[in-house]
Image (tube, rainbow, N blue to C red; front, side):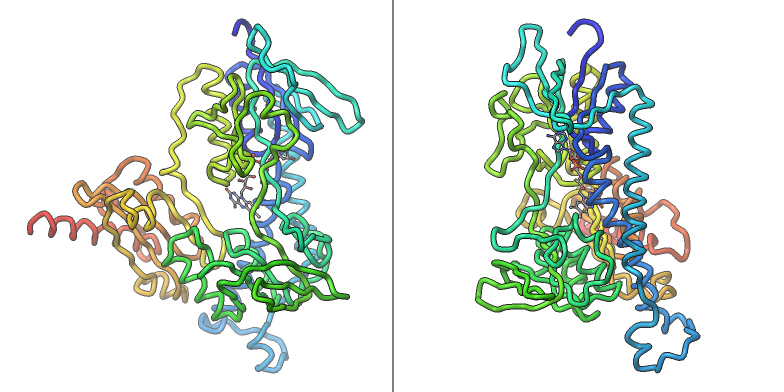
Length: 484
Ligand SMILES: Cc1cc2nc3c(=O)[nH]c(=O)nc-3n(C[C@H](O)[C@H](O)[C@H](O)COP(=O)(O)OP(=O)(O)OC[C@H]3O[C@@H](n4cnc5c(N)ncnc54)[C@H](O)[C@@H]3O)c2cc1C
């Protein structure tokens, strides 16, 4: 490639816009094509809106679950029995207006910083041109603009970062009013009285927990034995127990076949014929990559059976000069991973030093109450022999700060290599576990030993004291094993 390298990025979510910033910093001529607005689904419909809703839910849960224990007096004249049920309420219309305001403001901020970096932003639908690679190695990207015009761009490297959209069941078509996808819930003005959430993966669990906290009566329909089948089993057990204790109807081993609107209600039919009734239904049954009708396979970009783009650890697809990042690759559906894959693609395309993607250092979080944060190797990896590790699990019930704060549910779990004591993974189940996982994440990333983690000071009293204590226990166990 001679002269300035031309980069075209299709999709302006975290995979796309973070890549655009890096490529511009490295001196490339960068264009981002996006059809909905920079920030992508992460900012406009998924990550940012759900966490903003959950911010309200979090306050409600903290209040509901601890005000009596912490000695707080609610000065109103609600009869005590009713007060037990609910002393504060939520104006969902107001919450949702805040959600949308924040999302749009963040999309606007991202657009500003990307354009300030010298990136050209085009509104429209991008796809690869049919011609494949030209003799100079460049590729054509076609942009279908909202006014119907088509623009042709040439690129030395193309990054596909088009994300994914909610999967729909053929017999449960969302209507945006009663049968909803997670992108549609922010149009609700009133709280669903009885919400049926179909799907108990991360998205289903987060929404079920949030709506229950803000006052809906929630039924969670799970096709598996327990909620969060992909997470640490002990963590999932804690969450399911908490959900049930707070009154959620968790239906395990129940597969939803369809949902239909009947007047101002919905009926969800399960595969065994059972019909569940509610006022609203939220479908959270996975997502579909946005890879259709983009000229990908014609250009030599291989897709797997689920329509996800196959990439290697430096984000290369099977077509030279075409990279892919984020949810359209299905590698690990997180905004942080999308951004990392996008940056890596640009480092590689522009000849900068590049570290291949390492999924074993990714920290992730389920934003329920309590939160579940995870990093590194998991209990499943240890069980199936992928990693030889020993573990310690410390319930938070024994942590002094947790006792003072009235926190009863949760734990800290650490995994380390039996010989060296190097920390290879961890799980924190606690309020704000997303913040508490960071020291474990650092330990995993820097190959720290349990001895090193145990020797660092923690504040007394603090929940993170349990992380140091878990490391200490693993260290002592390692020494005992070494001596025996
Ligand atoms: C409810 C929910 C909550 C989540 N919460 C979190 C969280 O808390 N933390 C976290 O890390 N992850 C979270 N995720 C996952 C996270 O949202 C995704 O991993 C992230 O959005 C992926 O980024 P992306 O850049 O691949 O795609 P996206 O963010 O989906 O962006 C893709 C963009 O490309 C555009 N596009 C698509 N096709 C074209 C085309 N042909 N031409 C032009 N533009 C196109 C889309 O309109 C969109 O703007 C959540 C997901 C869901 C569903």
